[in-house]
Image 1 (cartoon, helix red, strand yellow):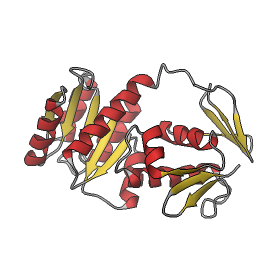
Image 2 (tube, rainbow, N blue to C red):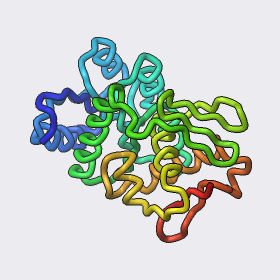
Image 3 (spheres, helix red, strand yellow):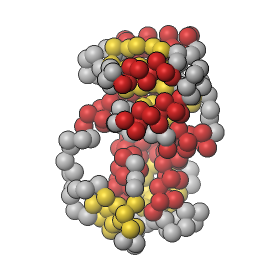
Image 4 (cartoon, rainbow, N blue to C red):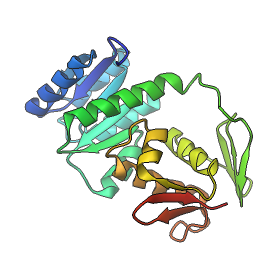
Length: 232
């Protein structure tokens, strides 16, 4: 069961979608406010009301990506984008704008609820949870320090987003092991279904940051039809 009375703002200008999402979230014990405008969403976040945003991208007055960037710049409020923009390039832009997850329309309300639950759980646990294994991990030019959450590539500090760091750490702790997509989603995002697009975007961005040649990766290797393997 979810934490009682966690507060969620659903930012959606399609009233039918907003009503369905709100109904499912309320059934799970969340307190829900729905708004149809990006400006109204910012007003609520600036007042410190929500614990999480469910954010559409196509909004009147203020685009959802602008909302996402402003909210992220102001702090660590979790954001799940729910959008009809389904191309990989759209997911990349959304995740790089600061979203924790990206779900394409049409979607299952139950899947959204599961993702909300997972994102909130990780948001609560992440700041205070000590690393299970504090030893530094190294492979080639990559060094990862779980204690500081720092990553060096050829001696240079590389900035990783939280999910990118957790994905890299999970892979590096299991060298040469073939990890299927469901296992990676469960370990890093907290759910084991759907989310293949989110995972592929994170893998792509991670390769661009830690591989010498992202198009021909040495370390984060695709195992076709299964998932990925970290090659030391």
